Length: 178
Image (tube, rainbow, N blue to C red; front, side, top):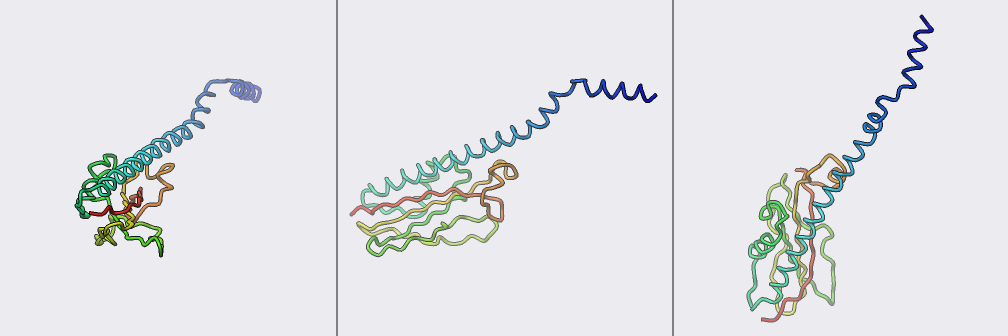
C-alpha cells in the first residue's frame, strides 16, 4: 500500500499539467495593476493638459481683450467650454485671481483653493480684475473622481473627504491698458 502511494505521488510530481495556470495566477494581477495604473495616469494627464490649455486660451483672450474686463463667471464659463475633459466643470472648477506686485513679491499660498464636496460652499478666496499694466496670477483647480480609486495611482492620489482628487493650472499675465 505504501508503494502505491509513493508511485502516485511521484507521478503527480512529474506531471506538468497546470504549470501555465500557476504562471497565469502569479502574473495576471501584475498585468491588471499596470493596465489600470496606465489608464488612470493617461486620463489624469489628458485632464491636466486640457485644463492648462483652456486656462491659457482664456487668459490670452483676457490679455488681448478690447477693454472688457470679464468677471469670474465669464472666465469660468470660457474655461469650462474649452476644458472638455474636466467632468462637471461648472461645479468642480474653482478660480483664483491674485494681484502681484513685482517689486515687492510675496508668493501666493502654495495650496490653491479647490472645491470640496464634503464641505459647505465657500466664497471665492480672491478674484479681482487687475488694473492697467498690473501683474495677475490666475489659478484654476478642478476636482475629479478617480476611475480606479482603490488601485494603483488612484489610491495614491491626494483626495478630499469626498474622494475627489484635483488637477491645477496656474498662469500669470499683465493686464493690457484699456
